Image (cartoon, rainbow, N blue to C red; front, top):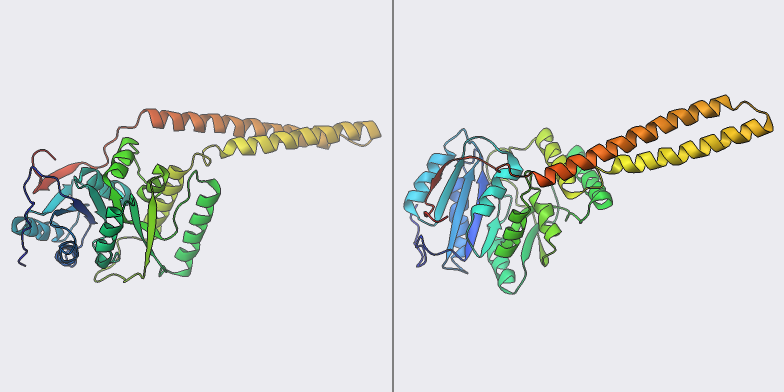
Length: 322
């Protein structure tokens, strides 16, 4: 595959646009997605690079990308020492990108490369975050139900809204990336953190094209893990939920003791009410202590963050000052 080299590929010059493509066992798609991205971005920019980050592929994905790196200095590669998951690995590459704007997308053509020029156009018009949002998700009844449940819970308990069907595919201004990097989140739920920053956001709906080849690396358990991590990352209310349960049990205890007093006054047995009140009081104390412990865990986590997102095995085509 022959690729033209644009004027600005000097190691000392940061590109205008960096495209981050996480991959795992994408030997069928790596070269095709790179060619598709290049074809789209060459229409709107002469200064861009593509950063693949490989999450412990067991096929020829890394070898194929190395060959592309040798043919085109705009293509770069980060190889992880192991599989660091769907949150940490892409986020690490986004933080390592040096473009004035960073585009994140999948390697398997679930994200449409044809949207990239429009992303760039809206960013140049002053929008800080441009997100591609799938118009309709193809999934089983179980996955669809779980997805709707996730969004419903997020709306109720989250400190900021999660955009339904936004996967993180989109463009982020450099200042957005710097803000998220400064949060030092060890398990970054990136699509939620984008909204948390408060920067201007524009949504571009698009039909899901489906995978070009191969099978998804996701299964029920990986998606469940992703959803739980997202909820934990986007809401402090969950960890404080025991406080609300303790408060409810405390009110219930008071009402039960009041009922015991009334029973004693009118001459009916009050012992069952007192037993019920004692049990409710124990639950109130238990959940109160759980709430305190949970909040202390949260504060400790926020004060001691410092775990690296990934450990790199090698880099290809990165200048020394990256």
